[in-house]
Length: 103
Image 1 (cartoon, rainbow, N blue to C red):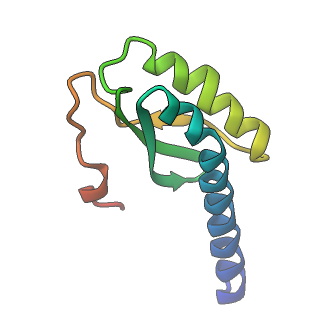
Image 2 (spheres, helix red, strand yellow):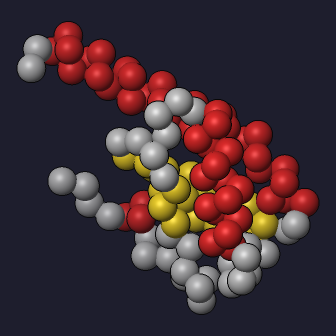
């Protein structure tokens, strides 16, 4: 693959990530209103890795919020969006996605 083509692909991926982050900012007030919040950990391919925090941790409705709220909203706002993948553990401790090596 040429350097020019790689740069084009990197630029498209960065723009996609910015679109996902901007869409999350739009939905964030709804989560904050209930005492929770969402952190965008990474965008890999067409999927967003997120962590719910605050009142969302341990909430029995958290997965429903992610699927029917956040994921559906992202699909409407960001063309080609895949899925939301949660790093929000039931007990409140994550597996530190930010420290994970990528291959």
